[in-house]
Length: 459
Image 1 (cartoon, rainbow, N blue to C red):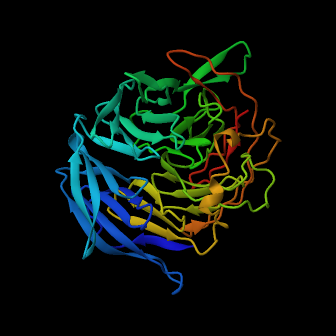
Image 2: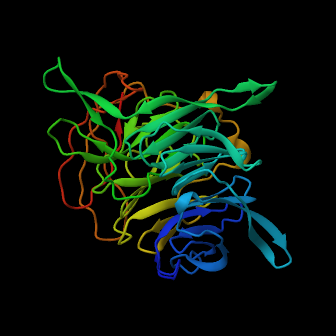
Image 3: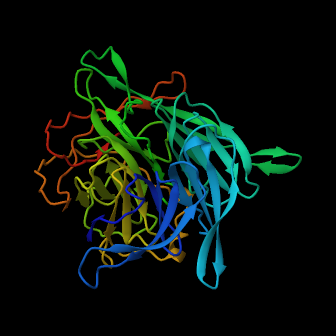
């Protein structure tokens, strides 16, 4: 693996607030506080045994304020971008003699305040967006009109995610709740329409204290004081898991809160199934690699029962952790890569590049050598796995020990530790929506140095 922060003028030294790779050409799009979107071509450094780079491709100018989020459609024909003031714009790709050109297509008008996150449905027919106006809006991308308004949140909506199997959607707010919506189709004049209804409100955790007759509820997530505009969550490409950032877990009423991310299993989205505690700073963004990989067969203690490996990235305010679903320790740690908060994560379609954007005005680009992450599964073989084969965590989790090691001062390091003990949890109680059962774990050692994130299973 090679890479690092690329010292170029990305957005006129202004913060870079979002990034995404084109699903076909692998062009990297970045969005900045300079009101513009820029497209970049990646330059491999593997043959020269050096860090990868980028070359400027084109600039998209139409927004009148800072661009907070952008995502390419699954087909790669459209690009959606959201900005301050409620601006939401669709761009369309055109082929000319000079090459590919992106042009303004349509403004989607309804949000009254800053749009912070958006995502396309897997068929490219709909877009879900989240805003400072506390709303989630589902847009009909073909008609460029509002399809449905989800108004359950009481504070900024800082993250949205769409189930690739199109049964669920999720939104995440600074009101400390993650809402899970289920698609209940309705028929109007014989025409079937999608209708998303809130199924779970994940907010607090139930945990037992010393006196077994008593229990406490504690919030699972950071409040609005989280020093980030974004809480970007992510579904796995097969729809089996939902990964949620900005977690804050207290094992006891008197213990210090621990920064964490939560993994939700598709078979029970009402509570987290796994937690990734130990980060020294809050986790602000997570994203699964779109590529699936063959199993390595080297670790039988995995918490995930999958016929393939999935890889995902977890970004704190200043560091990056990369995991796979076959091992219990992070496979890559990039520590202290930016001077200001990381704002977004993007994987290239083949999984050979990973990009980070930051408020310090720069982006980090990592390049993985051929099969460094594993042997990719060809597209035609991916169809074998469907929703009925959605894996879950094992019914019984064996006792595991944690090995705490010091981090090296290098920017990139490999994780080498085991999981901590995990205990069975009580079933969730319902109060003002469904609340999640809390993981009961021992408190990790308190260290000022950077800590590794270690998965913990929740029975």
